[in-house]
Structure formats: C-alpha cells, structure tokens
View 1 (cartoon, rainbow, N blue to C red):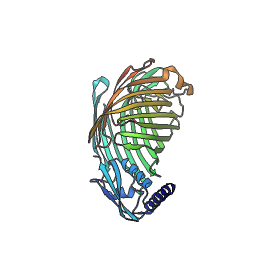
View 2 (tube, rainbow, N blue to C red):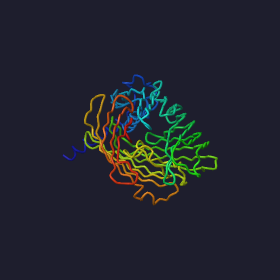
View 3 (spheres, rainbow, N blue to C red):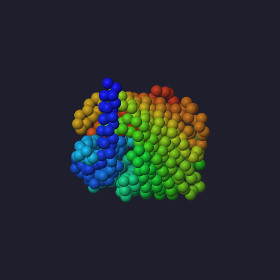
View 4 (tube, rainbow, N blue to C red):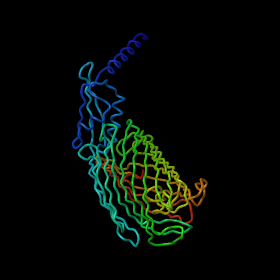
Length: 423
C-alpha cells in the first residue's frame, strides 16, 4: 500500500515537473474590439517561447483587469504537445468614452454645471485624454492627457493644464471671508511602473495662484488681493495589492504623496506637504465588501488662512459641508460596508453603511490639536451606488451623513452626490 502511494506521488510530481518545463507556443486574445491586441500583448510578462508559469499568468490577469479599458480578464491553457501549450486570454471591454455632466446650486441658489468628456482608451492604446468646462459663477476649464505605457511597458507620460476659479472661504481670527481663488497650472509628469504592484509618478507643476477678496471680514494682516507664482515638485508612490472582481475589491493599497512648493513673495514661504492614504478591503461573503481608508497628512505649519488641508464633504467627511475649515494637518478614517442588492450583466446596485472620523491641526498649532474636542468630527450615514459594469468608473453615488457629536459651528448633516466610489 505504501509503495503504491509512493508511486502515485512520484507520477504526480513527474507530471507537474514536465508541465512546468513546457513552453508557451502561442498567446491569443479574444474579446478586444477597440483595444489594440498588440498593446495588451506588450503589457504581458508572459511571452511566446518562455516557460509556462501560472504565477506569471495570474500577475498578467491582475495587470489587465486594472486597465481602464477592461472590466475583466481570465485565461485558459490548451496543450499542443508534451512540451508546448497555447494560452487563450479572454477580456471583457469597458465603454471608455465617458461624458461628464454635473448640476448643482451654490450661493443664492445660482445654478452651476460641469460639462466634460474623457476617453480612457484613446486610439485603443490605453491612453486617457479629455477635459471639462465648469461654471460656478466663474469659468473653469481643464485639459488632461495620460499615457502610462507611452514609451514602454514601464514608462509613460502625463500632461495637464488647468485654469480653475472658485469662490472659497478663508478662516482667520475666528472670522471668515469669501475670496475668488484662481489657479492656472501647467504640469508634466513621468510615470514608471516597476512591476504590477508598484508605480511611481514624479514631475513638476508651474502655476499661478490669485486671491481676490469678495465679501466677509477683513484683517490688516490678510491681503485682499494676492498673486503668487509657484513651482511645485511632485512625487507619488503607489502600491496596489488589490484583487479586482467587477465592483468588489480585496486586499491592501497604499498611496504616498509628497510635494515641495517653491515661491518668492513676502506673504507665503516655501513649504512641504505630504499625505498618505492606506486602503484595506475585505470581501465578506458573495455580496459584501468592507472598505477602509486611513489618511494622514502634514504640511509646513504656518499660521495662514491659506492652509492646504480642507475639511469638505467631497474629500473626507460626508455631511460636514463644503470647505468648512482648513488646517496644516489631517487625520481621517473612512470605513463602510458595501452590500450588493442587485447584480446583472451590465448593472449592479449597492447599499452602504459608513462612518467618517477626522481631526485637524490648526494653522500654526501643534500636534495636540488632533485630540482637541473642537477639532474632531464624526459622521455616519447610509448610501446607495448604481454601478455600470460595462462603463469605466461609471458609479453614481449618493450618501447622507449626519453628525454623531456636537461641536461649535458643526454641520448636523447633509447629502453628498458624486461619480465613482467615495474611496
């Protein structure tokens, strides 16, 4: 009996070794209509003539599923002979020409809108190009181009131009004023992907900031008109260890942002800002997904009303309001449970229960500010997601968040709308 078992084990191991010694005779891709097959083949680690390796093929599927052009990818293996195999890859494409239409109201119930269009698979080569025009009482526009594999499998380029205008509150001496903020920028970034999990972005942004007083309190130490020419050096390191399956995520992800801003003026000095986003996702059963984001950031701690970290509905705490405060440091934890209640071939609907907790360091303050009651915000609520499984990033979300603690001038809650998951 023992001899028979040993023979079976030996036979199994011999078969496994022979399979591993086999090479790839051909790689065929089906399901790609707009996307160039040559682009997809160039992104693969697996190549014709190389040894067949399931671990490498699994990495290739992760790479393909992260492309905006594709919603899903999987492979099959067919044996040609004892020493060679055919790899058959099937991909499901996204619709990637996405219009952007947003309507909302602001001061005096004036109607604002944003109109744009982006192609996330330009020329079928996994390049993104597009722009938008926005009217919120002022005219804003932006143009963006991103080609992560422009030069090779690992090297790419991004170029961005923006002329942004908005009315923003600035806070100082327990008072506030409304300013017209204008940022005109030109940005060039290099993109490098060392492997399927690790990516680096680095480059420069040349921009001009203008602040023009509109209404509210005034202070001799706060100028009513300010124009600043700045140069920003940017670096981003992204680690992506997530497993993607349509609307579900599982695993960890981390993004580190570092910026150094150079400026020459008497009002604002050079400064450094960094923030880190750590994500943890866990599949719970067939339809559940627990999602978390922990953000920590600090900037040069100047006592200025133009502090870089903003307390805002659409950025960190759902229900807190629009640009309700600023700080030179930020700690935010967002956690939510997403549950799919409807899932068909092209559409999924999710409900979610969330809690957002955050605290800020006041401009010119110290790290103890993070633990002061008046700086802590805690919101919880429910939401709904409508997710297209065939259109890239086409998730319409609506959340209602309400405050769980009482703080001076704290919003009691409100609705938050947006495109894409909150995080």
